[in-house]
Length: 465
Image (tube, rainbow, N blue to C red):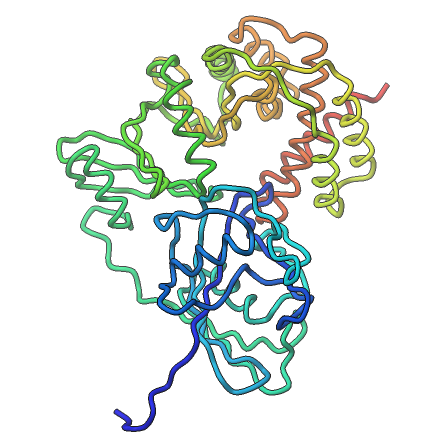
């Protein structure tokens, strides 16, 4: 131990305000302006600690001063620690990055003398120019690393440059503890939550869908019972699923899971298990698939009638489609853009629809078929009030070339679609296709991309003389 002066460094806090966007997770960034360090560069809301202030208090205060949002201490979680040295001068600092996914208020510029812009940006498409120090913290955050060293040298640029020298050195955390016998890597806080709900758990298995933002475990209790524990990727999905299980799903009886417990802070739920096998990716015989579509039609009808209808507000289809087309444009075929824009214009001219409770992701991968032929439905994290036809969009891919399946679904649904609904379904199918292509390309999901291309090809073919 050295007997010389102790090394001290300033501490600053950085806010990673995160939400779920159409292309995946997004973070809030602000552009520095005026007589401040790194003016003109994008940066996370941040600042130094005040005397006597702890880090959580500091990031909550800075968030309110810079963006106007209100954050509860329980919603602040540690994300990354960065040891940084700027290129001008030799003193270093410690930056602590905190993730927040729940807040009150709408973010906006609150210090116009220090900030002239603020917006949400996808984590995989951060804007430039950005402060290199901030970019180092976000790079570590995206990589799931708990810490990084970012020691710049004299002459380095303050701003991050994709073609420049990157001084970021990511530091991994300790290896995860070994899984218990018969168990998967269920984090201890989630295990405690689950065992409070269902008793002692003797076996866990990670059954997460590879492309989902959250994780799912199958739990086996000491008495042999089975449940599923789901940890949502964001508060919006958690809130939607809990609301659906509490208000809409009970009317569907044993055809859907039952909510056993939920934890809004951990964004986790425990639900009962459903019996049956998944038809996703299976080569079904025609008669079985007809029964499946009839069952889906009955489920959709029951869900759409589970709560009173609501009138729709003003449509923003054109603005949404314009943004999605811009993201998907390099990957679209000739004529796709013109087709989708024409359908967006037609959609705006349709009579205002009524909105009903919907599943939001009605397709084979969220369905089970029991041995007695009953169709069961799970995964309600995308459920919301929407048009009834919105729940038929992704099933339309299974109807291509199989008129009997479409007929079977509508037979189970109990009625045919009106001409307005038919047109609305055509429009919404195009919008979903473009959104899927943009999302699939950004997240390396070729199945969703291909489904989008198939849908657009089918819509082109249907409009040809």
